[in-house]
Image 1 (tube, rainbow over the protein chains, first blue to last red):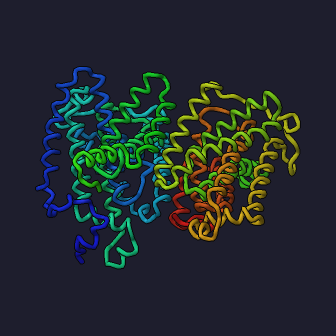
Image 2 (image 1 turned 120 degrees about the horizontal axis):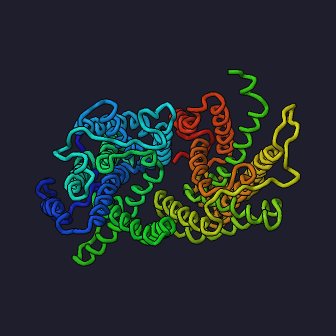
Image 3 (image 1 turned 90 degrees about the vertical axis):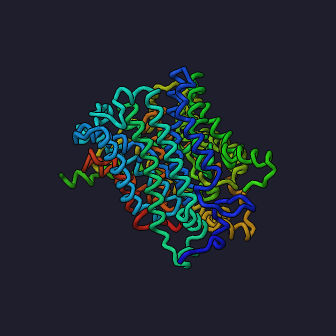
Length: 344
Length: 290
C-alpha cells in the first residue's frame, strides 16, 4: 500500500528542482537551521534592554502556538479557531498539577502536556470528522466552553474563577526555579529551545510520509480512500500533534507568568495566534514564527500610541490584503527572484 | 422545580424576544455567507455600530426615525464593505477574508469608543411601547412584544422575499450551488451587492432594536457575535430558514437553561452546537455542506 511519490507529487512539498530527493537529515537547510538554533541561545547577551528581551519571549511563545496551528492548517486545511483552548488548558493544568495534586514542577509540566494532549485526542476523535468550517466553529465552541467552565462558581476552588489562578511552583524545571522562570534572561533558553523543538517537529512531520498523506487527503479525500488509505487516523494524529505543539506555548506562559486566567481561554487569545499565523503565512514552518514576531512587535509599537486595536485592525487588513501568501511567502518570492530560481 | 413556572407565558416570550434579535442578526450573517462564502466576523461590530447610531438618532429625532434611518446608513456601509473588501478578495481563502472582517471589527470598535465613549448607555423605549401590558394573563413589557413582532415579521418578510421573488430565487440558488447559478446566468456580483447591503442593514436594525431591550455598551458586539456564528452553523451554512429555526431553538435553550440550571446555562449553546454538528453535520437546513 505504499504510494509512490509520483502519484502524490502534485501536492507534496516542493523539492528543489533537479536535485535528487535527499533524506531529511542530509538537506543543507537542516544544517542552517541548527546553526540558527544554536545562535539563538546567545540572544540575551546581545540585547541589553529587558523590555526587548521580554518582547522577544512573547514573540517566541506566540510563535510556538502559531506554528502549531499553521501545521494543521497547511497539512489538513483545518483552521483551529479555538486555539485558546490548548493555550489556556495546559496553563491551568500546570497550576492545578502543582497546587491541587502537589506535583513537583517538572511533573506538573509533564502532567499539563500529557493532559492537554490526551484531551485533544479525545476531542479530535469527534471533531476531525467535521468539514473545515464546522470544525473551526467546533473548536471555537470548545474554547468558549472551557472558558465558561473555568469561571463557573463550582470550579472556583480549583481554577480561581474570574480572578484566575496564581501559581507557586514546587521544585525546579530543568534546573530553573520559579523566580528564574519569571526573569527574561534565564527564561529565554527554555523558550528558545522549545521553539526550536516545535519547529523541528512541525518541519519533520510536514516532510515525512505522514505529511504527504495529510496533504493528499486534503486535496482529494475520496480518492485517498479509494486508494486504500485511511483518512481518519492521520487527521486525528495531526490534530493531536498540532494541539500538543500549541500546548507547549500554554505551558511556557504558565511557567513564565506563574498565572493563568480565563482570558487565556478567550477567543481573543486564539485570535492573536491565528492572526500571527495568517500574517506570516502558514505554508512553511517558519512563516508563523515570522508572523508572531511581526505581530508582537506591532502590538508593542501600536500599544505605545494608545490606539492598539485600531492600528492592529488596520495592519491586519492591509497585511492580509497585500500579501496573499503571508509575509513569509513574500520573503520567499523575493528570495526566488534574487536567485533566479522559479518559486514553488 | 415547578414546570408550570418553567413554561410560563413570560418565559416563552423571553425566549422569543432573545430569538427574534438573534434571528435578525443570524439571517444577515447567513445571507452574506450564502452569497460571498464569508463568515463575517465584523457582524457583531456592525450591530454595535447600529445600536450606537440608534442611540444618537433616537436622541436627535425619535426611536421610530432611528428604526428607519440606521438600517439605511448601515446598508450604505454595506456597499463599501462589498465593493472594497468582499469583491476584491473573493478569490482568497475563507480564512483570509474572515480575518480581514475580524480586522474591520477591530477598527470599528475603537472608532465607536472614540465617538460615544466606553460607558454603557441606556435607551428608553418610545412612549407608545413603555410599560407593560396584560399578555395572556401575565404582565409583560410591551417593548419585548414589539421586539418579537418586528423580529419575526422581518424574518417572515425575508423568507417571503426569498421564496416568491425572482431575485430571492437567485439568492437561494447562489447560496446552494454558486457555480451552477453562475452558469445559468445569475449575475452574482450585482446580487451580492444587494444581499450584503441587506445583511448589514439587518445588523443595523438589530442594533436599534437591541437598544431598549439590552443596554448599549462596547462589548455588545463581541458577545452576540459568537451566538450568531453558532446559530448560522447549526442552521446549516447558507440556509436562511435553518438560521431562523436555529435562532428559536437557541433562544429557548438559553432561557430555559437559565431557569433550570442557572450555573450551567452558559455552556448550553456550545453543547447544542456539538450535538447538532455531530448528529447532522450539515445543520438543520438544506444549505450546502462546506
